[in-house]
Image (cartoon, rainbow, N blue to C red; front, side, top):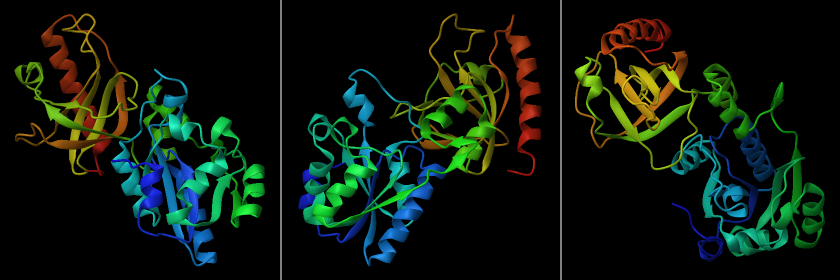
Length: 305
């Protein structure tokens, strides 16, 4: 999915370009402000708008062993950037890229991209030891022939960031996450076989396996939408009624739908959190609560699906 900086440089000529560099996890409202600015910078200079999307997130290479939960898989982020009218390049961030200065990073792609403008926010920084601040980039630009366009980050009480959205999800605040993303938070995974417990209880579920580490919401029961059209009762939790210390499982009970989803990739949108996860004294007590949850989910989804 990603390519190296050398492969970018050796690829077809794309330049001149207006360029923005970042992780763009989730392509939230703040990111879209950046993408709009790079489009404007490109239009003003007869250039093409381009985004270099770093994957994995630099912190995972700078601090080995640390992983960042993702708001979306890379493919979805790239597709959203492209839909915003900006040409995305998914670039592998590794130890070699980590050690490049900001100038070395930009010049490494110059053979193909030929940057005439670099768009940043006032608190942006990239390159070795985050030396590529707006001020330092302006110095580089004077030598290398590109302008630096500094924009104010999108704010919503506070600056919008992927980490802020992850925090909202971790707190179960789906509404805040939705507001910051300007769309409902999503989980994309492949349907795999579970233990069949949901079917036994009369609530068959699609259990999800992920090819990435998703930013999960707080454990609990949610109203959701599968593949943009089917309402669902979504559970994110350890299933404590049957498992004393189980792993976290994401499963969706599709409402008013039947069929075989095994091995299919589906997307679950979270609409609202209905309740926290809790253990029940018996399977019957759990089923009674699930029936109440379904009623609440249908109410939450009324007028949406």
